[in-house]
Length: 286
Image 1 (cartoon, rainbow, N blue to C red):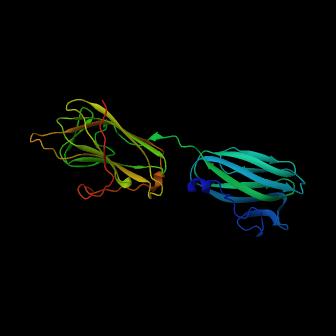
Image 2: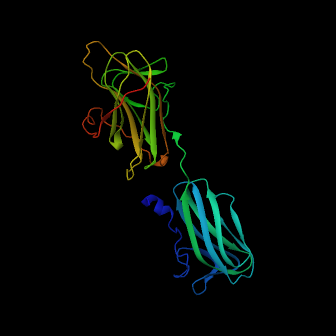
Image 3: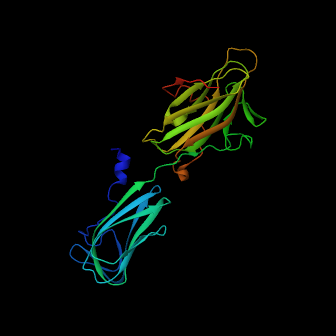
């Protein structure tokens, strides 16, 4: 089983068996009673858990010595479960947002609680379009670039040895799909590169004819930070006459990474020429 998934299937509660007293818990009108947490009326017991993504929480606990009603809930959402009997409980909650949440037990009467377990299954990711202004409707807004690039009729026109770069946050271990439309003024070589992942694809098209292309792969696990620079570059040509690469409708579909980790980084145009291994050729399809 994948190690990342293993982590989400571990019990995330500290000292859920209360073997070390109330360590790890914030308690009000709750005392330790020989390996259990004993609630007095109006008692409150809570513990904070950090969840990095939305998902589903499965909560298990056991109630003994039941003397009055109570409840359990998470500090996010509207999920609530009444405690109104002895015996084991198994409760599911849906968490729509990542972040720190509190697991909260409350009492109106009195009871003992033990064997608290908190498991989290990450929500299945729904890919979204991460690239900004891929249609160039707003000029070169959101893009970094080097060399001569002009916006003509809502398209980016790249001259020789120029490039477009945009930084996105991608979740490791999930599929990425890059799509684009391109046209060249004469036969030449261009490439699409994911700089941090060591991926480069050489792309081309028939002169003066728009072609649609696409690339797909899986974002590597263990890449930190989860930032990717999507680069399109026009390479040199044996032709003497001026030539251009025209780009439009660029999209990157992927599961987003942590946006708050993003920091703008500029790569020198020429220093990365020899830094990417595993290059492969691919052609655009009309």
